[in-house]
Length: 369
Image (cartoon, rainbow, N blue to C red):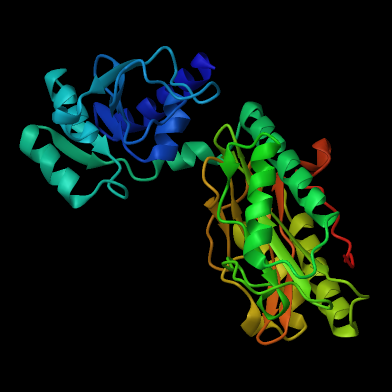
């Protein structure tokens, strides 16, 4: 993988040189990991004039576990606790290397850090790196997609096991904790985000925080979870009915959300505008009279973070590329009654390669559990 990380840093170096900076200070953890292979807590990456350094406060031999170790081609510059902030130390090192300018992630760097850098390296001109690394991260290579595929397999396994257990009488909170434990049992680094389990009137809410409400017969049960594998995060959302055959209104609402989700999935293709994918899913629900019940977006990118670009939203600018993983996750929540959410992680692929690759494969049939 060393050559992969070196190539990523080389692409970033081309961008910063084109912008007039000699080097860059990368401080956002996901961006550090993307370029360096690992991001120990508080670590920053310096793309210097003479060499690239991973700067962090900790012993040099205290490395992360296998699968998330720093690129061996990088020199690790370990600081003691007394040495202070790694970002400030990295800027000082850049100045010592003779750099006159340094691009920093202003969207991540705090005002206090910015001032501290100016204090230790007053002659160093700071420029804004902007979202250059995030743009590089948009299109995934096959190694990254393989990690996402494994994360999705783990997530499907955990969800499938839960569906085989007795659910009536158990609380949302208990079910969420059990799902997160099962993710780890199957090899995940952890949960990609806080697992959402929503029952009855809570069902269908995006980002619902589990409560002590118990599962009852006739409830809609909506679940949203995802695994982290080697830093890469996926997402799945499903809705079920508990205990009995679904009511007519539940079948009608489920079929509508399923049709919207299918329309969004089918719109995924290289060159498709972000807003057009959103529109494909949104129009199905809008035409049924649910315009005021819809979320701000119907999908988003995933990778080293669970909510990356692109954003599939009405005002989103840009077009999809091949090998961009995204979620498609329309949903409707009816206050006091509940609702439906269906969510998949897919990878954009050209039609010649079979179209969008579905990573999360748990059934989308409306099951009565």
